[in-house]
Image (cartoon, rainbow over all chains, first blue to last red; front, side, top):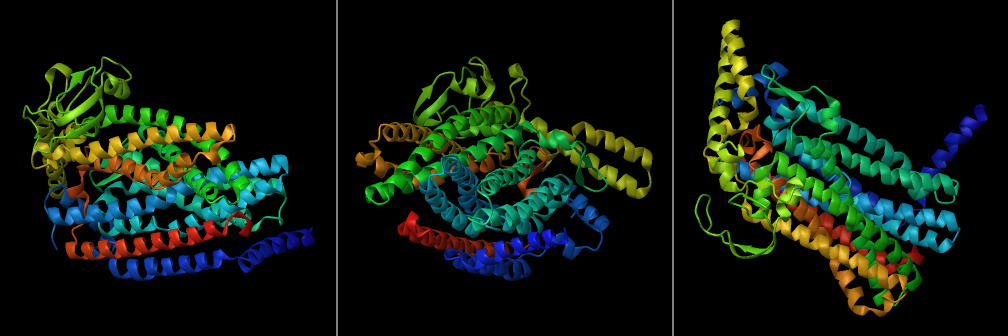
Length: 75
Length: 509
């Protein structure tokens, strides 16, 4: 039973390992994905896209109050 | 900080840019996954290795499209938090569930079955591989379902209750949100349009191989699958489009009127098959909205209400009201909306002052007028009208192209069945040059859906001006151009890598 489980996980490992090693165009695509995710999450998100309500207020109650004031045009 | 029309316009432009670019990649994935699943099924059934080569070629192009499009939608979630924070807070409880399910589903499906589909050839049994391919097709389509449930709710908000203490819409009935007729029709129409686009893509590229006299057997096989799948998908697209229009007529009559350039409502209203709008036409004047037009009588009444004699309200009826047909004017709705906003203010203040009796009375007034709350923020009645030209031309472009695609699939299937497709150069060129128009139709569809529902972020409840965050418009402008550069770069990369792979051909995969 233990051998079967080990064999199962080994086959999954080799599925991914061989898949990645034998990729042709896939390597370019992975590089592109890595660059894209870096640009999106590190540069774009960090520099330009703060979560406005999270940054400006500490509690959900404060956030609710701010939105209520906006909806009732008291901001 | 500022909160001006300029800020709202830039925030909208930025969201539109990211959504439209994201939508360049998604529909091809939705449809191509099914096409490769069909091709692989034929391979497994027949054991013919040529079908395996065919499947692998299209799977390679699917991988490119998937990789480039991957995570482009996440930027919209960044925008929710930064540029649409009011909106995000107000809808948070409704959007949370569908988007979380979508995220989990996409992650687990993509990390497991995608891997088996791309890496598992000759490593797992044929049946296991085929099952994975079908699961990828079903999974990617189900992933789209949750996004469209969220979008459908914005177009027709149901199954929720607005909590005046937290300023959030809270889900009261998951099934009402999930089975919202607007969401269901939107999902079916959207995914079937993806099948049509993918069929055009396979048909057009296969036509290129025939024009080049390369890999002709592969191209003929692909054309048969693409034109039959495309034909069925196109016919289904018409039925889902009909249901979509019916939902728009019931829940967003202003959008329907704008889509058809209909100012004066009428019974047996016709659909404009072709027409040019008069740009000088204004709401309430007696001018003909068209320089010229060709109408199909009764068709709009039938499309909207499934009744040839039904009355279809025009923009003027909706703005000024029409007592005969029980239509309330936007002016009246604005009054009720202002009462709702005033009552919400009173509720908040009385509660703060500890006067619960008056707070309860204010809450009752709010609840009686809540459905018109969004109108309370409009400055003038005509603010409730979307861009008629944008809605009209986008809708007619989408419908016109959709009809052409159906015809193209029909002709291609006919010539493929009699084995003469390769002799018809005109048809091969038409198929090839139709590919970009598939994308034009896709984008036009989104413009109809999203620009047509303006000024609402949530139909009747929250206009875009109230949904936007109070941030500096210059930062929104900077990120708009940043995304324009980033996405254009990705698009160029996709086209270049795809063209290279197409030129290598099926034997190189």
